[in-house]
Structure formats: C-alpha cells, structure tokens
Amino acid sequence: MMKKIFTCCLLIVLIGQAGCKKDYLQLDLGTTLPDDKVFADPVLTARFADNAYNFMIDDYARLQDTYKGTTGQLSDEATGVMVALTPLWSGSYLGANPDVGTTYPRMYQGIRIVNTVLAKVDEVPWSGSIYNPKIIIAQMYFLRAMFYFELVKRYGGVIITDRVYSAIEDIDVPRNSYEETVNFILKDLKSAEDILKVESSKNYAPSTDWDAGNYGRPTVGAVKALRSRLLMLDASPIHNPSGDAAKWSLAAAASKEIIDMNKYALQPDYTNLLNVDNSPEYIMIKVRAPRQLSGFMNDFIMSVGSGGAQGLLNPTQNHVDLYEAVKRNTPTGPIISSSPINMAGSGYNLQDPYVNRDPRFYANIIYNNMTWQSRQIQMFEGGTDFKIGPISYTRTRYYCKKLWPEIYKAGATARTLINYIYFRYAEVLLNYAEAQNEANGPTVEVYQYINQVRARVGMPGLPAGLSKADMRTRIHNERGVEFAFEDIRWWDIMRWKKGAELVSQTLTAMNVVKNGTGFTYSIVPVEAAYQRNPFQERQYLYPIPLSEINKSKGILLQNPGW
Image (cartoon, rainbow, N blue to C red):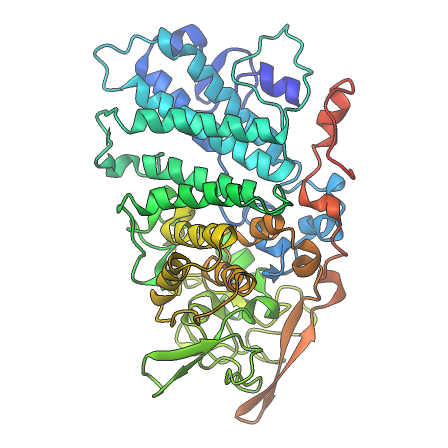
C-alpha cells in the first residue's frame, strides 16, 4: 500500500472518489487531464489542492459503515453493539480495520496530494488569476501537519516524506523517530503560520480570516490550536514519562498564544455547540451544510421508540458519573456549590439520580423519564425506549443527546446540522490549565481558565487549595464532561496512559424498574460482550498495518508488542 500511495496520484476533486492512474487528475467521472494541463491552470491547481481536504478525519461516527462507531466507544465514554469494534475491545488490533488499519493509508494519500502541489506550485502561471499561491502553499503545509499529527498520535514516529517519489525509486525506507516526526510537524506549522500572518487573497486576510464561502480552511488560530494539541501530546505521560516540566511549559505557552489573540470566546449556549452555522468558539470545523442524517441518526443514534432503526451509541454509567452533583437555594435558582457525586455531602441520591447535576449532563445525555420530543423517555423493561434482549435498544439505558438534535424527528425532519469540530476555544482553555498545572502546580491562572469553562454553564469555581494531583484529577474530569462524544476522550486516555485504569474498568449501566408512578434505580455491569479485555501496554500505540510491514523488505519496523 505504501508503494501504491507514493507512486499513484489520487484522482479526487470535489466528488471524493479515488483512482490510481499515474499523473492524472479526475475532474468528472470518465474525464481526466495530465499533470501538465492541471498545473498549467490556476483554477485546476486550486481544485487539485482542495482535494487534500477530503482525507482529513472529519466525522464523529466513522468506524463502521462510514456512519457508525465512535472512538468514545473504545473508551469508558460509551458502548453499544458495534461488530467492527469488537477486535479493538479485545485488544486484537492487528486484525482490526477501523481507525487502526484505515488511517495510515488515508493520511499518506493526503500527504501525496500536498507534496504534489508543493512540487508543482511554482510552475503554475498565477499572474492575473484570483489566487495567491502563497495562501495555497500555507494550506498545504497545515494539511500535511494535520495528516502527520493524526499519524503520530496513533503510531508514534512514521515515515516522513516531503516530496513526490517517482515510479522507479526505491521507497522502502525506515520510519523516522517520534521526535523527528514531531519536529517535522512543528516546522510545517511554522511555515503555514508565517504565510497566513502576512499574506492575503481574494477570500482571505490575516485580520478577518476566510470569508463565509471558505469557512473551515486553516487560519492562524487553527495553526496555533494544532500546535497546542501536538505539544500537549508531547508533554503527556505517553511521551514524557519523566514528567519534564519544560515540555509542559511549552504546551502551556502554545495555548496561551491563542488566548492572548483575544479572537475567540466561549459560546454562551453549550447545548447547541455542534449545531450552529458559526460560533465565536469555533477555531476550525468541518464545513457542513445541514445533512441528510437518515443513516447516522436512524441507524446509529436514535432510540427505536423515537423512530430509529437502532440506537447503538450508548453512554455508560461510568461517563454519567463524571457529572458533578450541584446544590441550589431554590429549585430554579443559580448553582451555589458542586462536588463529585461520590464525595460526602454531595447530595447525590441514587434513587433520584438525574436531579441537580452539572447542566452539561442535560445537554449530553438522554435518560429515563426526561421529556424529549414532547414525550417521556421510557428506559424500563416494557417501555418505549428499552427492551431486554433486542440489540437495537440501548445496553446502558442512555442515548446520546449531543449528537441527536431534538429538532430531528423521524419522518418529520429531513436534515439537521451537526458540525465536526476540529478545535474550539474551550479546549484551548483546558489545555492551558492542564499544562500549567503540570508545569507549575495549581496557579491562579489554572483556576481562572478551568473556572471560565465551568462558568459558561453556571457551574461554580473549583474549591481553593487543591493540590497539583487533585487539580489534575479535576481537569481530567472536566475534559471528560466538556468534550463528551467529541472524539477527544479516547485520545486523552491514551496520552495520559490511563488505559488500564479507565478502559479496563468494568463498564456499567443503570437498571431501571418501574414501580407504579415511580422508579427504582440500581447500577449494574454492562453485558460481558460489551466489556473490554485488560488493557495492554502495547495498545498505547497502534500497530503499523501488516500489509505495510510485509512489503517493506524488513525495513519498516513494527511498534513494540505487535
């Protein structure tokens, strides 16, 4: 596959279909042009460059049938009936295709396009066109950095290629080190940022970023956000076992650069973060028009009782337990205090488990007896939304509200908006709080920025006097709640090296029994088929696909343990 990736030019422009005929670009089905024609035309060159965006990771549910299966279902965040995820749950990654085997070739396909553009861009007759070639170059540097980031966080050090290989070259080359891969990404990000800071085009200016028709392309803020995320990975236990504070300081500084831009802000309403056209919190998202979600919604998210074919994304009780209990002076008054539900005096009551919780719980989770789409959700046996046995119903007595806008009703709403967020401002604030705490302990700024995220939903600030370890625990919990179902939890667990603690823990569900007009609640284990095998050290890095190893004449080495 690697040889095929390096020597075949992918033929995708806008329509998203791939081919493999040397030096050709597919414009329409059945229509091709040779490279010398493509790069003789600024419009075709720009379209060819845009093709690289098609290879970005761009949706939450992507691990089975292109619209089912999330990385949250690999972690303690959720479970559900997912045939394609079973090998991952067992730790048998070498036989797994979702994410493990597909991301590696996909990223190199995108890299191939980027390298082709960078090699040819100076040959294009740009004079008189609407395009600034430097802006196209900046996008290519950013996209290559993004592709390599997706590789390094999964596989560690990988093969670095910054040029197009010819058909006759020997491309069996060894992997670069993890450090070399990180430095290569940082170099591309600097190149992108240096251009985006000063250059303008018809659709882009440093002061205003992209116009509405180009929203979703990289900006200075997006470059800085990817750098922040990369340096957080580099500073975390997976790559910083000694806890070198200098690495954490670099990560903190990268996030602080974004804060100091004074360009982004938290969206006031947390409940519709994924469902707006634009937001002050968005740093970069996947551009999407309202989507026809009959497959994603009806066949993966929605309960059968609400008209779905099967509701397979099931939040665990483990995740639900992350939401703090809150206290108010009056039932509808402001929150005056909060604490983890297992803390003495929290006020949490298992027999009334869904009252007085962090407001983000009500934004993220569908639970028993809540009002949803003008009816009460019924998670008890014999109720509308749960049955013992049929796998089309939730295994945990929860469904995911965050990815199911209430406006979307079976047979009534054809489309709804669910954006894929690459970077949002809340992550920057929590990245800074985490990195600063690891470097310098729970300083005033650590409290300031984590409390800013909590205040958005009316949550009170964290208690004063927390130790560094206690603050770390609270930050980890805050990320689990704030970024629920946003493709972050699994990667956080990996970089924290908490697989044995969080992935291997017993996944639990809420058992609901209806008693007249009331309910009895008890926490029970999820069925054995949806539990995880004991997490192994080797799982922190995915194995390089065996097809690549086998074709490399022994040069491409596998990750440890695989």
